[in-house]
Amino acid sequence: MRILHLLDHGLPLQSGYTFRTRAILKSQMRRGWTIAAVTGPRHASPAAGLESVDGIDFYRTAAVKRLPAPFGELREIAAFAKRIGEVVEQFKPDILHAHSPVLDALAGLRVAGKYKLPLVYEIRAFWEDASVGNGTGREGSLRYRATRALETWAVKRADAVAVICEGLRDDLIARGIDPGKLIVSPNGVDLAMFGTPLPHDAALAATLGVTGKEVIGFIGSFYDYEGLDDLIAAMPALVAARPQAHLVLVGGGPMEAALHAQAAASPVAAQIHFVGRVPHGEVERYYSVIDVLAYPRKKMRLTDLVTPLKPLEAMAQRRLVAASDVGGHRELISDPETGTLFPPGDPSAMSQSLADLLADRGSWEGRRERGRTFVEAERNWAVNVARYAPVYQKLTDSMAEQSAWPSPPILNA
Image (cartoon, rainbow, N blue to C red; front, side, top):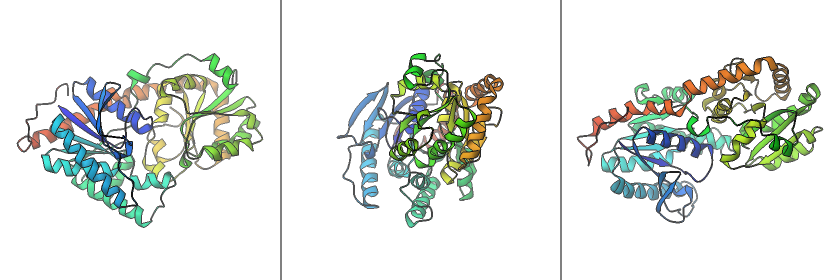
């Protein structure tokens, strides 16, 4: 089985998007499938070419000149479709597997029709909602409605659609999409890469100034929807209840300057530490010195519909998890079994929940164990990737007579 993945961007760039992609592709390769990927113009490669990163072949699409919407997007789709077609001629896939945003699906649909190949479209978040969450769009605007309509159009024409959570699935069904063409391929952790927690890194704790302290942490991107301003606002009350509490923020992003300013003005500024971005290979060291990973996402369509990856990584690292009570978190966290949920947008309630958790040390080991067990059983990519097998098989069987080249049966299904 030969699968060609169509991506917005990929390794060596580092993001939640590329980490999920890597986990999928590496897990599929371990099943004996032949895998390659094409990255789109937004990966910003200077020229088309082939690059192998971490054992994965990435065919690059040359960057194109950015134009105002929608002309820029149309140009990107055309350039991406042209490059995908070139790779199809060379790689001869049995399946095209496009990953959101919808531009990738639109380019893939052009090629799938020309070569009579089945197309799986995988949605990690709706592009229109991601724009709102990133502060570049407004819910209900003309562009928002147009993007939503385009997403629905692409979903109806794809041969199968994978979504990362039940929230996205339910939203598509409400739009009239046949549930029979939808599968849920949830976020997961590649335990082969990220499965063994490191021992407490005493040297790193000393460098951060948190030796012997109660450490709350966040590791990820600093977007507004992550609610880190609420977490910083919760710190004075938390420190009043738990004087040894410290906050460690690892990462960066659009809200970085504003968060630095807010923290500097806090009466507990000395107990708020910014680390900056760290290489992915160093992340486990930071998990080892954090007691509780906090995810204070604000409540909006994006956070209600989409499940994040980071809480799963924390559970895999046997860390405690505390998160806002939004739909995406409720799919991952069972309060109080595997984590703690607190009201979104409420620093007072957040500080109380964190203080209660820090005080209840007797429950920590059980929570850690249940969280790790949940990831191993239900969010392990070695298990998750099997969800694609029956979909691929059904589509290749139905397209075999039309395809330009024969499709062998899937092995190791």
